[in-house]
Image (cartoon, rainbow, N blue to C red; front, side, top):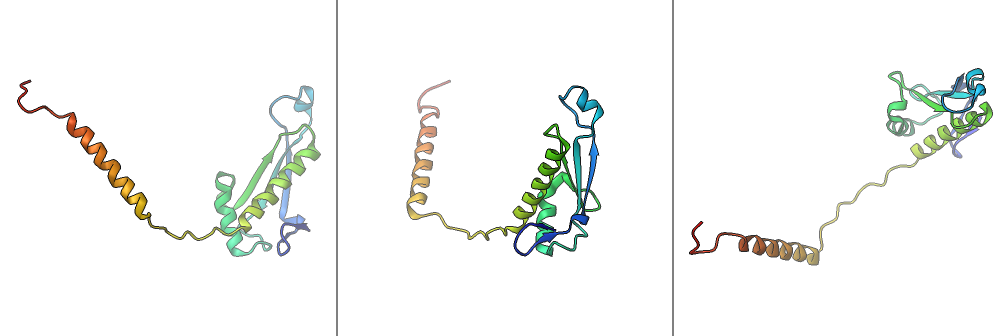
Length: 141
C-alpha cells in the first residue's frame, strides 16, 4: 500500500508500469536499455479515491488523462530505470496530494471609498488631457 494521506492509500495493483526506451542523451545505453517509465493509474475506476478527490485529480491531470480516465505519467529524466520509477511515483503522489486540497471559496469584496475616489480622479485627469488635444476655437485647418 502506498500512503498518500492519513485517509487515502493506493494499492500497488492499481498502478501499472511500462518501460520504454528514453529519448535524449545517453550514448549506447539509450539505444539498448528501456529506462523510461510510463506509469498508468486508472483514476476513473480507482476504489481508493473519494469522489471529490477523483474529480479534482481529473481536472489537474489535463492532457495526461486519456478518454477512459487513465492518468499516464512519463518519466525519462534520469538514466536509470529505478530513479525514473521513483520520479514517476513521486509525481503521482504529489498530484493526488494536490487534488486532496480543497479550493478556498472566494468571498467577493467591494472597492474601498478611497480607491473609488482615486479611480474617478484619474478618469477626470485623463479626460482633461484629451480635451486639450482637441481643435482650438478660432483655428482653421
